[in-house]
Length: 285
Image (cartoon, rainbow, N blue to C red):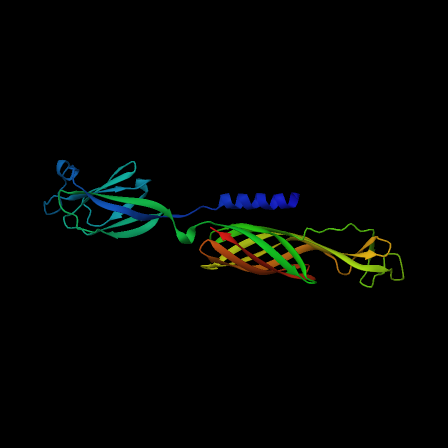
């Protein structure tokens, strides 16, 4: 449980360390019939013609620069940039090092001595969104050993995940035997009832990488075991050491995202001796 808690803690820290990118979008454009700034605070162009005014409202307005038929300096105030533009201007280019750039074509040409309001908003870029993965998984291994668990992760272009699987079975053992049923310290096979018990547990974590939307690749490792016990004729149990494995785990798989749903398929191994496939269906939002 301590190892499991550590994995989830590392995953949470990784999520906090990834910054979500935003980009600027146009929210609305409207003529301000009662705004007289273009008349009361008039500014003339090179031909001594009055300008029109575009009020650009956006958070962190001072982080934006503007290009177009702009006359004079842009006037910045908290949440707003006041831009004087020549009569009949038809577009404005909006730039920011942090939020990208767009060229906006006005739905109507800017007219002299008229004020307009261009509202912008900052939105998460779809390609830069942090996706959160929550997925139940099932492992199907050699000998029809089935385990169940969950995989969680966070990813933008690159991210992290943690996964745990368990078959909810365990069996204490009194002896150890080999694949022939010979117990440790004995030279002859013991007698067995034919009853077996198999326990499987694995905890892994690693990297998720977006290859091309909507496909992701995951690669990781961790610790796990697969133990097989045989019941002896006297009711005792012996662990079959030839068919039991404990140690490092490695895995590789892919994830396909369809809107907020996701499918995964992969392969996992314990020390490259025990193999199983992993399948899952969950959400990725």
